[in-house]
Length: 263
Length: 235
Image (cartoon, rainbow over all chains, first blue to last red; front, top):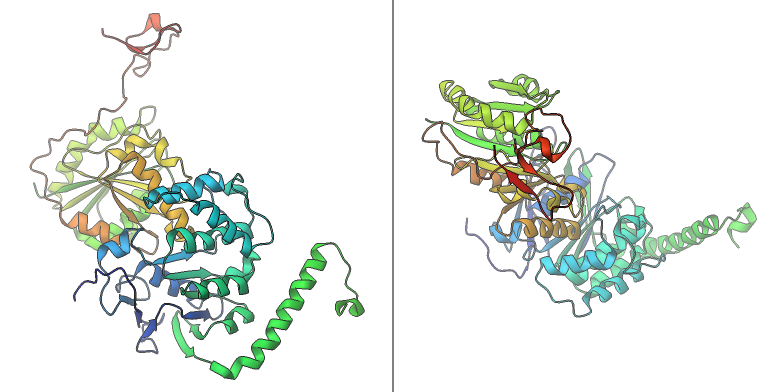
């Protein structure tokens, strides 16, 4: 197979592997293009994280699922996989603690240095963007290890957009960290990024155009709801906003009687 | 000889044995012999013998530095592995003070580090990394892209040219790049070999058991309080 050396990504293709019982997976190929939004859903243990891990490491039949990932239709060149400055994918893991013993500013500056980029206000841009994703203000002098889950996630998403600037971003259960998920999706769409969410959140699932349903370690179904779910999305957006308000009220110490839920 | 020495170093719990298991799975157990050096407790040899049926050996160093012990026995171990018909001897160090390395000129030196060990970890174990051929970064599935790149930068500060392989060693992701390096290895010409670096072993009489305090009582690297730097006093 010819190796791909171009760093512009037109397509990323996922070729099927096998289920946990060794049966071939139920799809011919999944193609992802810049600007696509995809959610991966399914019960715990159904293979969602394994799916995005395959994408992240550019599996070549060498992972447990036996899937293969192609870039622009062919096997990706080694530097695309191994050199972080050329890698077109950034993954934000479920892990919400960053153990780096650095301040936010030092961390981002070190990331810039690793990519041989000059800091022409980029660190500040990344922090500003991160602050659009979280209500808890992040400043450059905070220590990475003391950031909350929401702050850490927000910062990593902002870093992926501003510093790594990869065309494809993978997000593992972003909703758990308490960040403004609709804002994240909006910005990533504006920047023409392909986003793949692993999610249990109906709002996130309906905000994406395509939904991949996992079962028993394999892709079970691929849904493209289109307009069919448009009314449901409007209702879920309202419910999500209501839940957000309730969450804030509980956080601030209110007691919620049945009458006051509506208030 | 038909045997190749792979020396695997790294701090405790970095995932050295998980990396060893992936190497065995990829090369096939028939070609492998395994040597573990540790201080007082190790069971990796029994675990690997049970899981893969490979010949294993374990040496406890007790009061002595385990890398010192490794240096003493590695020549015999190469002959042992060669006599068994093994193509690779995997030598796993204890990973203690991180100051010295068991890598030899003819071996493939692999340093195993965990991606969750903190930004300054590579600086703290600089000699172990800078003399290695490959740095294998484990637990990579636990960190996000920015953290990966920052950790990588830490390794690059210590060893700008080192080959870096990022892996989830339990699953084996990314190991294909380590296997490419291993498959290019040539057999050792003889059991005689030389260390790549000078380890800080036995550099003073404390190391050989003299218990008196004070530089006046010792040879080797000594230091009076008022001296600007360390001194070497030969016998």
